[in-house]
Amino acid sequence: MTGRAFLILANAAVRERAIKWIQRLPEGTRVEFKGPRRSLDANALLWARLADISKQVDWYGQKLSSEDWKDVLSASLRKTRVVPGIDPGTFVPLGMRTSDMSKAEFSDLLALIDAFAAERGVIWSDSGFENSARAA
Image (cartoon, rainbow, N blue to C red; front, side, top):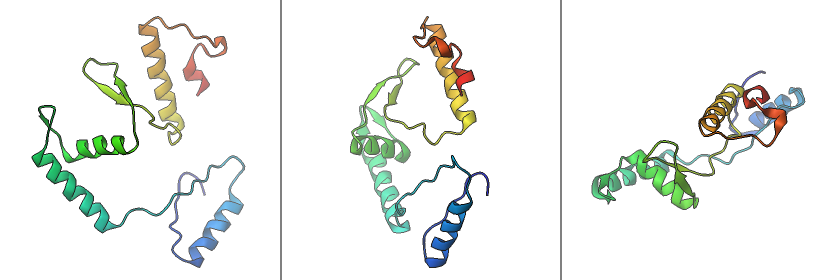
């Protein structure tokens, strides 16, 4: 097995398959366990409520989409902090995780960091990684 795969532990046979996969995986393979996903009914309720909020609530003089409201409300639930973004008038929620990034995505992130820092004259304190794209 290479790449990504997932199983839903629905019965004993699937559990046995998971055990077999784990026993065959090479050292260094990452395994993640997550709880069950929400039900389809719960998902439908979420989006219905978000649609209602979207239609009825002005947010600082703006109408937000259901997706925007999901972000706003999720950030509130998680007590996410935001800071001004690189571009004027933008804001960025803090606490976004990079642990699920592929090597290519992570390399792109490091390239963006390098470009942003170079524009602002940042000098790296760790002289072993002057070009962080190589570190990826």
